Length: 327
Image (cartoon, rainbow, N blue to C red; front, top):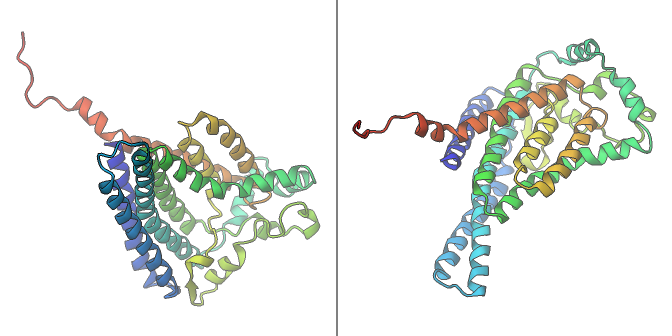
């Protein structure tokens, strides 16, 4: 039942995001470019054809217990689960991407002065931390760890599909759904441009990090905040979430999603611990962004666990319809 709960939750969140996007788009200068539709249509067609092929092959080799038949059946199952993941995840990805751009297209004052003051109250000095980590040994390690997060998402997908763990696959997609709507809601009320844009370090102060460290989103963010029409093309979209740090939230959720694979759990856990440190100098996040991102990640995990266990708790707490007579 947990798998069904996760699937229903993701579909409900995707539908909710879609409704919010449609209403918001009609009052925003952001326009969903028509150039997106051919790509979306191609993806939808591939998903449909893959699903049909999976079912056809599974029907064709039913009852075939030969080694080749078992291999073909496994390949068909893999394709079928991959199709399921795409059918659930792609609409969520589209809706959440639109939401992030809509939330960024605001004239609300940037919250970076407040975020920096909170960091100072916590005793954290971002320029000092940048200077300490900007060296030939530390900076490359933090940069590689930071950018290694992206490939981990398809890793979780493909690993669970290969191991036939549809329950873990849908649980992870539900984590992505809940974190997307939570992060999108927060960033709509707390817009921020990031530590690099706020502190304005010179090029030589971060020369051992990547050239666009913490600033690859800045041009898009300023275009969205300009008040002029913005054509959103999905293929050209960038991550826009500054507060909370979505890298931090996603890193925590990925480690949780790999808890059944001990050979990966500890190695990815260590890698993402370094990645979270790297969100400060390479990702250009304030410390409070990272703390907020960790809270988002943990909150989503707790919520998804509760959703997955709902029916089991109900089964243990609901009295039997026909109780046994007393002795």
